[in-house]
Image (cartoon, rainbow, N blue to C red; front, side, top):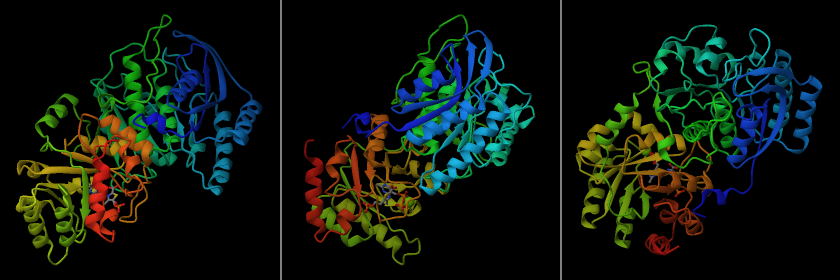
Length: 529
Ligand SMILES: Cc1ncc(COP(=O)(O)OP(=O)(O)O)c(N)n1
Ligand SMILES: Cc1nc(C(=O)O)sc1CCOP(=O)(O)O
Ligand SMILES: [Mg+2]
């Protein structure tokens, strides 16, 4: 069970609707290789056949409307997609036909309660510089409201926006305008050497529009995703690989923001292992689901006061100065409780880490409760974390503070760090793990693993397969604490993912004998797998 792949029940179906690249590095060929490498079953709808090598596109022939439609209908009846990637559309009539078809299917799927993510890579030119689509300016507006994400590179964005993108601000504006015009999230890719402002490193801009299952604080926001540029000439098929990886990861049930960062890590790893073939740019290698944190991008929310992406050298140096207190002993079974009686009961039962979580900021005896919880922690030599109320935690010198991603924006982390408090941060996705990890907290909580009634969550239950993926990504970096719906019946399966620690609320607070419940659960947690 430690191997996340072993937890995938079956290969979800992903479609690529794109053109054939006879050279094998891009188009349908790159898409199928990527989708298969990322544990999905790939189906193809071919829009055009290209006579293409690494140095030239000799001929492009689009398939007939009849053939395009027949491929779509034939697949839909037997191999319905969990996600769709659209690449080369050879002419305007293909755009119109596909948009019409998608609009009808979308209604059918929605009636069945199915939402199929659609990722459009607006391919216009091959890596060798030759044009692939015919017609001066393709009009993608028929796709309005039908897409989940569009992934133009900076040059394609400039064509779509009919303007030069010579500054960061111009790029942000064009991406936001495109997101409004097509009612979709946008990933504007700065990976190819483009304007001067994006040559130093690879900066992609993600504009989030109505993304399912993410924090309200990230909705409608834009983020810079920055990676060091991988110096290689072998970049043929990078855009195809990225967009098909996004579709494949979404087909596994990850939210859009996660799919984008995983796909970026996949492309970075693929570029590093890329190989020369033919006389022109060679191809990306297929390196399977990324498990190396170093391949993932740095994430920065765009604000009007700080619109520019970070300079990676500087931000990495800063992060290492900023690390929060390391926790030497495992947190273990970590109860999260709302009052002092149960806090003391569980300390008596042997809890060595515990959290006081009082959600009402106007609770009459809030400060007094916090003082007493901290003092009880000292009496029982236990680590007491205070949820949310970081100023009171500093004032009364708690062991640590637990904050959500939403709380991060309103908290002063520098103050917490200089007071030498430990910091736990919540996360609910790869994307939030990256954001949390950039603050170098003492641990990262990840949830909710199973359904919970303790709080209303914007995200879906993550399940064990995702938990195992996050654990394998973060092993050796920081302790990961699993939370949400964990009880005596699920504890063993959570432990089998090799997660470091587990936090529980109801399994203890709603037990008839919380002390006995703690002892039993703790024994099960401490037992060898
Ligand atoms: C260990 C642990 N993990 C997650 C949470 C949730 O924290 P947060 O996202 O701040 O939500 P609230 O608890 O404040 O509702 C937690 N408290 N503890
Ligand atoms: C407080 C909390 N935070 C979560 C997160 O995923 O961030 S899940 C959660 C509730 C956990 O309660 P129970 O153990 O009763 O399911
Ligand atoms: Mg909180």
